[in-house]
Image 1 (spheres, rainbow, N blue to C red):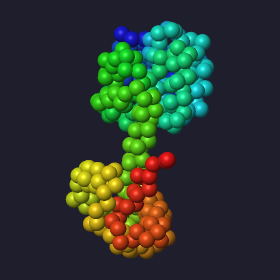
Image 2: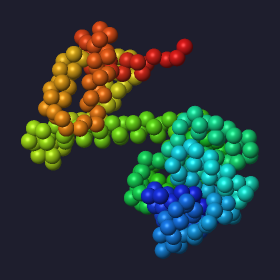
Image 3: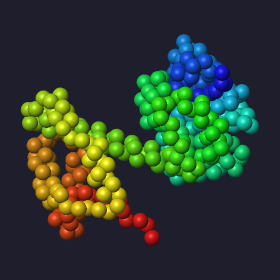
Image 4: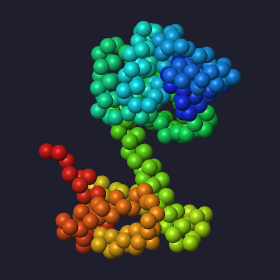
Length: 285
């Protein structure tokens, strides 16, 4: 049985704390809104009035907070209660540059820190499903690997570059949010065209999205924009979509149209639509 603390018990943090307590760990938790901690008492989670109180005696501290500012504030507030051997496991989605700065600062101060963002909903956290990425010291990761594996379906160590998991979390979330935005626009177009929403979603099953991403994405990453769907023709199709939607709000298509217009104005209309990613390949000198 491990003695662990959770700092931040929102939807995800509360699910993590609940699951840990159910596994038999001794769990103490803190949250700025104390009612959220009190709701975990039924699972055996002990409430703490301050971060320092929560982490006192813990061998592992999990942070699931809002952003970099809050992470820094809470770690500072917890310092008085941290033991010399405690490991900070930060699941917060954060800015890569600030994550690297925080990791370097904490290492210089002798605090053990790993950044471990996740792709999980609360249900996944309760059932040890989903995916967790880890960046930081290899030796430190090995010391907690077995325990972290109990909390997730897939555990991926990305190496010692402290900001690498943070960067990858943003990449993944960009794809997820892009999909949600596009799905919202598909449903809007379905509504405008008097097509049943459920039928519209079923139609999407004919696309092998994983295959398309693997093939086209690999080419785009290498700067290969072989012509298969002319940008100017794709822009015409987007015009038809915008006209069909009329005054209905759209989440993604207007931005796609604006980017297409920029590239067409720059003389790239006859190139493949994947040239949308051309500037992503430009590297700072």
